[in-house]
Length: 122
Image (cartoon, rainbow, N blue to C red; front, side, top):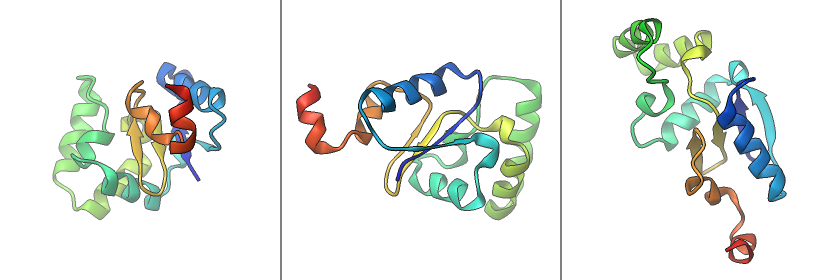
């Protein structure tokens, strides 16, 4: 099953949800603040760049403070910290057993369309 972690008012989250509806892809939605330790760990496992792929990079002074704090923690502590400070996490996060998408990308989101359906869409 595909889980989508979103934030209210996030345009990219809205686009992802509309995309999944348009193509009839089954999913479960969760507020990003409901992201479990296991799901954060799974997302990290599926990233190319670890925490850097999951963290907002908007130059906000508070985010910079949080990123610096993360750099000085163990992975376990950093995951716990993210659970407490979900405002740092980029949204949406689309995660399945073997696939991950952070943010909205028209090309990359196609990975969630089953192969059988993909050929009919092109």
